[in-house]
Image (tube, rainbow, N blue to C red; front, side, top):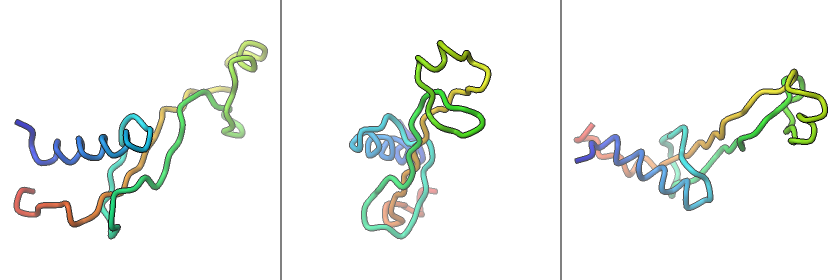
Length: 88
């Protein structure tokens, strides 16, 4: 049986999937009417100097010197009304 915290994480991940993202990496609680995604960073290789996306052709031509891998980040806000304060 899942704990209350695990149920909140499962709910946040299902909401993130409804918006087309895989998981919610950060969960915040706020004064919103319905859950929403406030920030999204897509995954991929980026330049250290500018932070812009680097294509496979660029990496094949110039190498891997100035690149890093950015994991996908999804921040979701859940309404305060879903919290059951007795179970925390």
